[in-house]
Length: 89
Image 1: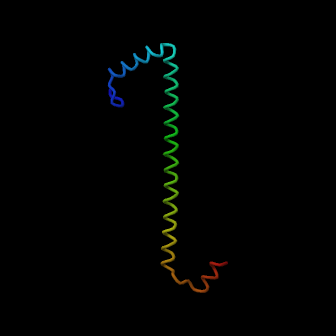
Image 2: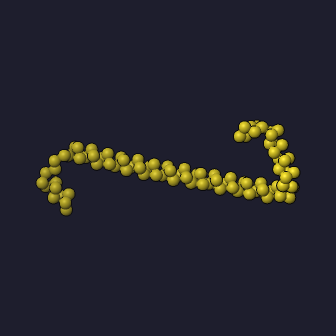
């Protein structure tokens, strides 16, 4: 078991030191607070990722739409007078 480059013996040592520093009554409260903070960070990270994906998709759609408009202009560079009146109407 290796989490963040810390093995089981190192984790046990950190737990013992935390127990000595904070005491047995305060340790569960600290763990709970740490868990809530990590959960909040994960939620914010997922929200950021979803927002980023949504913006990237909108940008891609915008570029695609612009490319299609450019292709239509190239396919029909000189509209007839009849087409101009239809566009202006």
